[in-house]
Image (cartoon, rainbow, N blue to C red; front, side):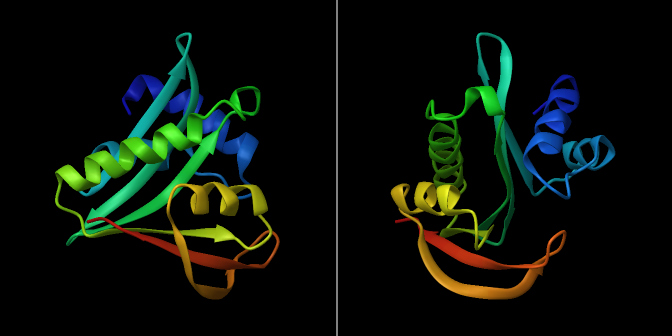
Length: 140
């Protein structure tokens, strides 16, 4: 992710999430030494992105989002595969994420990509209040 990507990523955030990250928050991640954000483009247009923090061998996915007109084209799968590749190169041991319990499409995607459900975080999300499914993938 570069400064030039931030405006489009913020638009995707607005489109995808009830509590989106601001442009300011995204800019701050450019300076965060443990943050990795990757952008997928199709025909020069920002299609989606993935963000994560890598701390002591654990990669925690903060965001995965794909713009509405780019969905069902494998963008999220490619972003997850790229993050996994980079995480392996950095000797990470596993990747974790939280996902809204009602987000069945995302849960199915994560399962397809090798993630397993390992727990539930009660009332993790607001707007509306909802549980988060905790998922993880071990990197071998």
